[in-house]
Image (cartoon, rainbow, N blue to C red; front, side, top):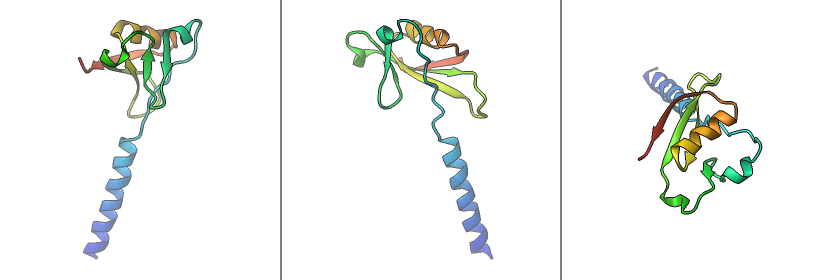
Length: 100
């Protein structure tokens, strides 16, 4: 009986952790001149089109959405440009975190 309860608890925890760790990334919508401003790489990160992108900070811009744990857009480049991309895509910013 105790082994069954432990197994059930382990399986429940696994489902909870995988649900919480799922990726709820928001991808910006295309707007006029968007191909000139940014691109989305294979990992889903929005990269602002500027020279030397590797030296630019990473921003997690959390946006309003219908998912219970929220949604975010990961963007590499100047913070002002990243926020502008979110706004021009029709998304509403709730808060922002940056690595620098």
